[in-house]
Image 1 (cartoon, rainbow, N blue to C red):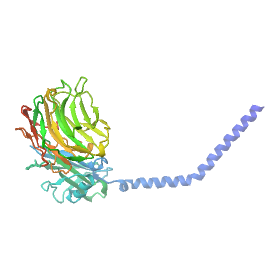
Image 2 (image 1 turned 90 degrees about the horizontal axis):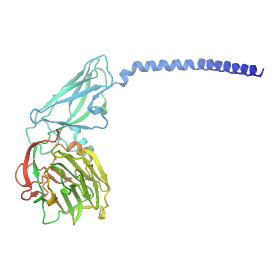
Image 3 (image 1 turned 60 degrees about the horizontal axis):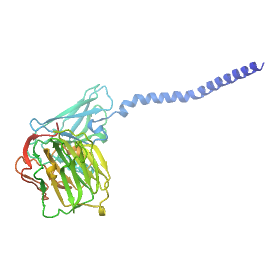
Image 4 (image 1 turned 45 degrees about the horizontal axis):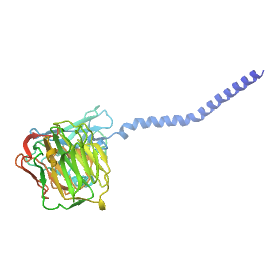
Length: 405
């Protein structure tokens, strides 16, 4: 009897729940119908309200400019893609052109010094048509090889979308401009050196440089023929006997195929994975606290050396290929740049395969080391830190070296 009573109570509760569901469905149905009607209308208008036309490169939110490489023989066909957010059933025609007026603001905001080269133009009145049903179309701009020495300066094309001529689709104003940086890759001669009987002294050597900084960076390309012994030192940057940067391949324990820096009483080693006869780009960046090593534009390792007295670092002299009898392998060096600032990873990546503008005020010294003959490596900044190779240091010159392949 007790079981039947419980079952009846359960059935009654279930019946009440079903009635409550029906009651609430009846109460909510007008609101639900209105919401569905509104959503349907919104969807019908979605194409017109949410669509837009923009430059595809500008839509990458982490990218504000793009390096494009100019072949020194054939030039470059620059493919500028204009894109829709959504396909439409009609042609969309939008103007495209060059607007150098916003370049000054761009340079100021992004710590760049790009130049506008008037010979690179898009004819006035040029349009791009995205056909009905398509998502994008391209404008191809041919750029001839430079007929002058850029001297490391970066020239650019500041592209901008114009008015939408046909198609009734608005342009996205935050994505209607983009900077294409036109760069010629380095094709240079580099010295192949041997340090057993001498070194490269950077002038002046009979007086102190007296350069005082809170930050510094040193970047360069380097190739070693082997790593047969430790302490093959490629740079020695000194102040009053203190090692600001002593950079070498290998310490006491073999194998020696790794880079090491000693700085301000501290040191750190890189990975033991370097391959002989391979060009590597290195950047050593001291930001006032940490010293970071980048290899080929990527973070390699970092550490925090002891803090310098007074918070500043003094640079009084520099030598290259400087460890004497320990330097038994052949070494190629190129594009050596000494900065008075902590350059960023983006700067490193954007500039490592190109020449540097020697007029940059943050450069302490810049040795392209691309003379092709002689024993002097000229400091292009004009600061007087030319490098003089002692006898028997330069074995030969390797021609037509490029770092973008």
